[in-house]
Image (cartoon, rainbow, N blue to C red; front, side, top):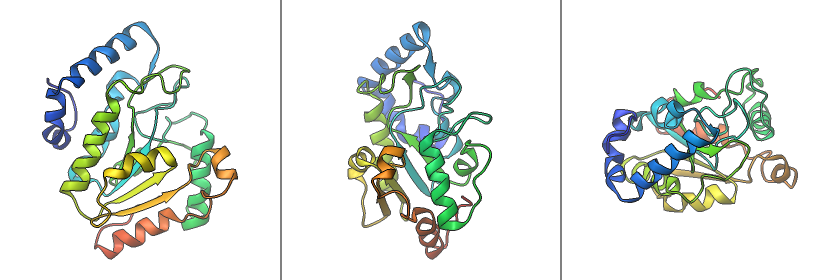
Length: 221
């Protein structure tokens, strides 16, 4: 099966496109987008991969579902389009960045500027039905994104994986911690953050210190 995705990812994920689950997933997604309102727009389903090629990936942030509100999702985990109100989780991420590395909270919640620096903003599930969180889970996306994580872990070295919340930490179980830096914290959602474990995690300064120690360019958060 031919899938329109960035070439370095195409090369590594082609085997997934040929497995029995993937045509079934494509059929499901096509039917959903034809009969329901779904996010992100079809051309942005693989945006995380397209904006952050395999060869340029330095940091991986794992999310769960795309945002399901109108105009929010742009195919990058935790990111929203320009002009869209920042969701609470993203507000908390920016607050931690301000406290950790001093970067002022930006007007826009669009994280494309991270992606082009080598931050893969990967949701476990790449599509969702409007206003129905989790509606496209367990249809095959998780298998596909697991494969992407496995390729990164196996074929690269000195990546930083940011695993926020129990779901991301479970999904990150395949990562080789002897080759990469794995940082864990509570999820930045308001409910999780208020119980402690999000604020003060200093993941952003730790990420940059690690990248610098490996001779890699730091991320401008």
